[in-house]
Length: 273
Length: 351
Ligand code: FES
Image (cartoon, rainbow over all chains, first blue to last red; front, side, top):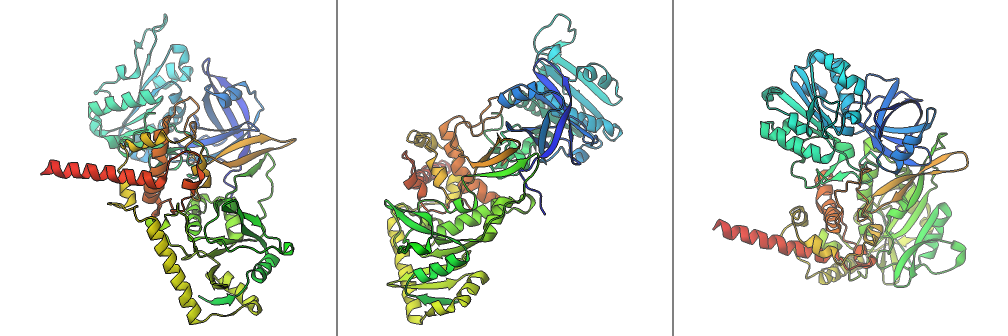
């Protein structure tokens, strides 16, 4: 028998990691095997409260546990932030498409992200790192408001920087006493020399305004719209192309996305809103 | 397919009601709505000469239903066979559209599918289209073409019943004692009534002519000013999407019961302001005009591009059913004029 589309898989929160004052990572374990591709999203149910879409931040190769990094932004995420270890949850999905990793093989992968955008980027990053020899390089340009606002600090400031084939640069938006790196929005640390544009793909994920200016910068550098991948955040509800909530022009973001090339979406008026 | 004749509806409906729950149209004010048929009540069921006011989707995709119980899941829903009498061609086309959405192989909605499988469809011919009916403009007909189990046509004081499926044929054969044979004369009379009704529809909509296919008119309206203008007459009652037989937006919400939780699927409306809003507060369609545009584009352009059919059956329910003054026909007409103007300007510029 076919599975009921709307039935969540039961699970529970087994660990909670405080990433910043407004962001926490929840480690969840499910009662059934669960596989996803990096870039796909899930619907997380808080029993009796509601559901919301999130992109897992852990590697898809880790099939035992899944991590979901959540920023306090509304009612549901606020309640999630109050949850403790042992809280029961439900998961539906995975939904949508993932990043076409195989198309990245042999290329420079240029990743641009800001703030909570790093949550889903972490999953992509871990996936790439797992098979790092297949890519020419993984070049990351990340920003946050202040150093404290960076999520995954331990990895970001240290262990990830040491991985061979990986080049990470960070910037913060507000001057801060201890920070000796760049200050300015993420586009201020992008350079056309970061990657070999003729053999690169770019991934942009973060708040809409940053995605817009990041994309424009990449185009200015000479990236073609097909080379730029965007992960769109829309109001995903059913996840299966029926309820209509996630529609962006003709696309059901839940099914046709959430990952799109800029080429696919550039004509649509609603992409940056 | 097989046709038979009957002079009264009651024995036919009684036979149906013996086998399954039967819903029949009943006049309520100037409109028809559906009611459960009660054979013992001895009331004459009227032959509805026009669509009901409520959309057929109610039978397949109820306003509100529990779609999941957790953490302990409950048994799949058990739907008993049911029959609906008096659906019109516009209703059947709307079911075709809902089938595309909810029966999609990869993501089948088992709630919809269970109901759909148990639904016995008895359509009937329209004989008195309303002023708001415009199905003919969108390729519709005032009588059923397909997707029915049985179809009923009234010819004077007699009813022709035609089977449209094996299930329908079996029913006729099983109850053959109720029926007499049709003759070529009566079938010819039916055709005449059908042609007359079609003519009535054409008269009603004689002013509703377009210079380009509707999907092109709407597909090219991305930058149209018409939507913002029209939005001024919309009172955001969401009535249009409720009564629309093809609108199928819904949202999911959760409730807490004594010792379990439920997930509920409920109709939603793309005209609602927070419909597309994300958790952080971003909202791609904050302006009412943008929501109206999206509704039109979805109906006439996006859905067609994806699935090969458009999402408006021309039933006119939205014209009757809303509290504001947005009239889908007038909006299409305005968009048509706008496009014509643009095309003309382009042609002149090219000269
Ligand atoms: S989330 Fe329901 S259609 Fe995409």
